[in-house]
Length: 192
Image (cartoon, rainbow, N blue to C red; front, top):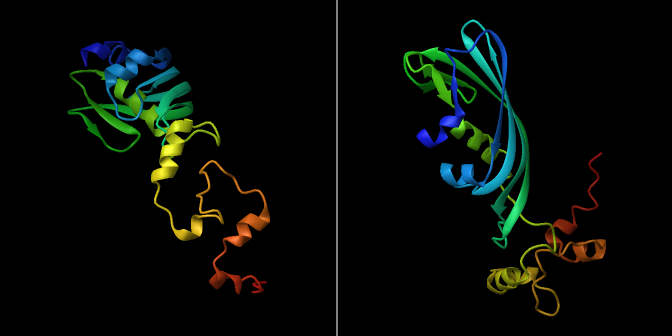
């Protein structure tokens, strides 16, 4: 973790009260941390550390943009990051994570490196499904995806073509044509 020494916070030397730190997570940070989710981006971090008698309360405010691959076309997609996170740090005999928010740091070390925590806060702020807006995906990749996609006969239209994933149904008639006839009898059911 020597390359992340900038993210070391010496807990023993902190006086009572609040302390503020600012960090910028750029492409070099994400490449060096070598995580699976994010490889590049620019995120500003404002960290406030509040020391009480036996604990340290870390409040993180992260804002910025990271690039992640689109799930559909694999091109880079800008994903906005806006997250507030909290971490409680205590001094103890050995390192342990008591919960998602509570960490115990060995008292003889007396410092915490927050680099991996910062990366996790960014990665956890990315939605599970991240795709471009309709019509913004790489056209070549979208065409190949449609060509090789497995679909049922019900998904094909009258011409035998498969509708684009980017196509949004706006007409009620288009949607009702695809309703399974077994569900049709439930339309007249009065539930009130």
